[in-house]
Image (cartoon, rainbow, N blue to C red; front, side):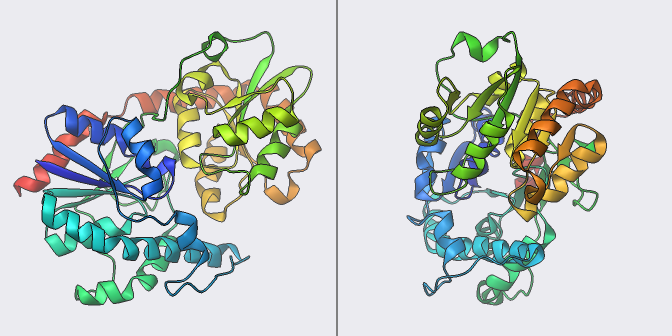
Length: 377
């Protein structure tokens, strides 16, 4: 059986699909993972073959229309989510010529696409093969689907459709206790942290004398994108009784270390480091949140994008996190929230409950038969 996996334009979109892709490969199936060209190294670092589908980046599709007209990011949260969906729609449209060639040459038996990898739905519909939609994180707003459908109206019309093709199987990776109540019915799979590794240093798997807080702005942060936000978080959290570690791409980490002498910063193996932490402070990314849940670590979320608000509010309602709106997240507010969470055991207790629920879910190899069954029907 041949399974084509389609990620997006950021490392997190690759990391989410790697566990099932590896399970399929280990079961004897042939696997390819397609994504933007700048994600090829992320895919191959996981030991999987990478098929680049466009040389443009995700930001290119968010900041310009199909004809190259520069776009302005809306300030209204609802409009921004629809705008984001249209960006992912433009990515899908641009990838279709290469995906069609790949489909003709390699002839997959099924396509597994990440949540917003809409090219997977279009390709599966054209090839008349099963389509599996695989969650990237704790959930994406429905407004993004609507935005993508509006953007992809010409491609849908060519298929004789007005709406996006629905999946033959939906795979969720969010613990049911904090899942989106409006998520479609399907299979819930245990989240498995995945990311580039590095030789471990002793501090990465041992606890220090002080409480340890990990700060991150996700895998897409750069010196031109959200660096100031991450730098501010490091400054706000640091204190004499708290050890701060920062997870960031190496070029960003180098700049942080220059600004904060002695700071431990880099592309950290979070699946190891978070088990030594007492709190994660981050901007709301789903992979960061789920990795913290797997390690039973409570979270302080300072969201920078409207689409991450709802999933993290569910975490907060459960008692395993606190959401601090960016507009009120001044240095004193962030520092006070960190102190309060570190002093309140219930946050850790609730995080441990979620970790237990997550661990009990079926793993990728147990979900794979549901994908295999689609090709037999």
